[in-house]
Length: 81
Image (tube, rainbow, N blue to C red; front, side, top):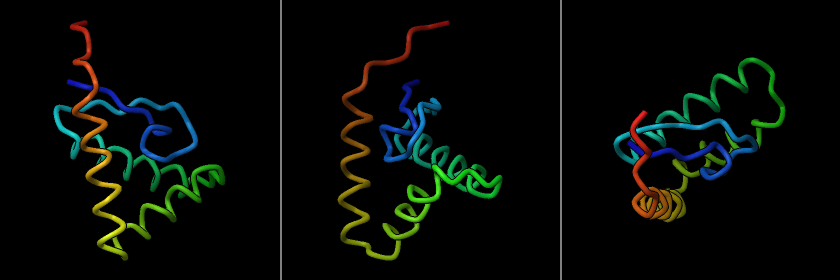
């Protein structure tokens, strides 16, 4: 299990997302952005807009995705609780 923050994934806050894979963490970030924007959080609106834009531009989106996967792979495993 590894941890990345919203900020590490391009968002504005330090909320931690935990997962066994980069894809799990990215999905958690996507859900977090959708929920916070739906709740009226303006600070997350730009990050949510950028997330949507990545998937509209596949080349740019893949660059972000590959970098997020590299960053995740470089993280140490979370300490057992």
